[in-house]
Image (cartoon, rainbow, N blue to C red; front, top):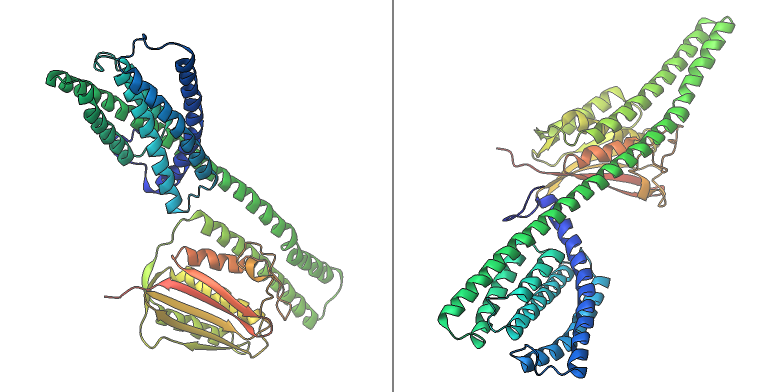
Length: 447
């Protein structure tokens, strides 16, 4: 376990841990204030029914007054901690700071109560600082404070002790020695507080790590079941076609024309099966790799090359119109992966566009971002499907207008790749008016 004596946990877990320990502190304030209130009432009962004038209290009137103050103040802390805990929000910075302030105030109140008991009960606090030490130990053990909060408590406690001490000790020598004793207790408090903080931070980070691993395992299990479903359903169709055609070819004489047609059906079914397998592997690889190796690229040249290949190889299916930004725009991209993104978006646009329809691809920039848009004028996407369009094995998947089958992985892969380019992708669509996919990427200023 790492001890954070003069530091805080790594930045990735610090914010979550702070929210966690602030909530715990609020619960402890509520419990401690209730216990302290009952204890103060018991003291009040003793003062009311027993003669304390001859007890070993050198400042009995001060102690009596302090007890009344405690009885009136403690319920305020109890109600405040109850209300704050109920409406605490880790996402609201104001709520977090208010909660931290409440915990800090109650911790100081506990320490001062213990400190004043030492003053009231003992002739020389330095000789028996049991109550003062007990208050410091309780606060250091039960409450979790960050490094700066611990230093503030130490400074405030030491200053309070130093200011109160002259009312009970007037000898310079005793004042100095008592302050030295107080400094020793505050050092012990610092060590206890930082150890408790480190222990709870270590446990919290371990629990979060276990939760993340558990979630990964659950997601992997879900993905496995989904992949098995795809393998069982989508791969079964092309394999069944291959088997049926080969049985026909085996069982009867075929003319050259029929033979050629059957071969084309087999090739088409094989291509479909390979495409499904490729999508499954691509999806799995994108999840395994946390990042891609990116290189600075002229996005205009990159897109122009892709469009030229489509116009050359897919001529007659659609009219792809490319509009550049009017000047070179640069971004860090993985060319092979980003080409897969563009191919998937163009294929998707073709599937839902009428033959010889237009597909607009445009490149633009705004502030420090590059925008790539792929727009079709086809049948569009129904509103109820839009929220699920980027899901893996999406329930929004549907066949194209010419019967093209969909596995439901294409747009999920697009979304994965764009996110790992530190970008984003959104979709806008209206039924029977077309669909627009917009990719946003960070722009680079080329040397």
